[in-house]
Length: 114
Length: 114
Image (cartoon, rainbow over all chains, first blue to last red; front, side, top):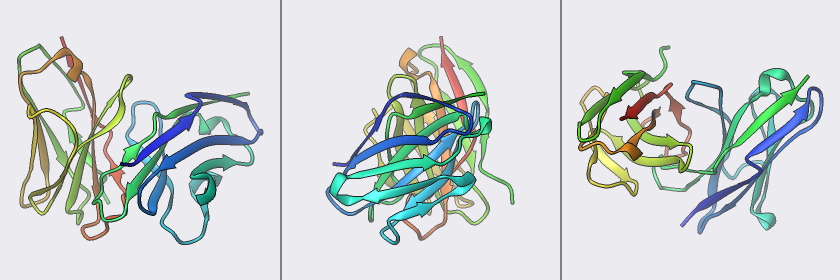
């Protein structure tokens, strides 16, 4: 069975500061890993995905994530936070050949202070 | 290209009633998935349909059902509503033959059960 753990349900950073959102997963097979973002009153939007190609994955809006198999982690980073980054972020895992059934972490709400 | 469209966006029901939610996927997408989002349980997978067939099913009681039509539009139904069914129900679509979990989400249908 697969699972995803996001450390920190709330993270607060100052505008211009580094953003680091943590995600650890467990999976019995090589996984596909994703980060999705949800803005208030909206659905989820894909930020980036890892599908066993490059371990450093670049996404939209300046975000990137690094797959570390030894640590079973897929942390999301952005060098400089912007006010518009305030949202809830979800890490998700999908096992290969599992269709489009995602297991999501509990989410991390990112707050950006001016 | 139009995104995933969900109707209705908001609805209020009372316990014991039933509800039907509708989802129109992105044109050309044949896979439709449904997720339930609640503050307590987070995002949970309900089911996935592909070419009118249920391909995967999450761990929800039989009161939750769905179907997909030949034009890929999907509906989900919840019968005998309970207070705990209050949630945001998200529909997502994806390309037909990719099981990579890259989903395109609608804005959701927010169900309140009184």
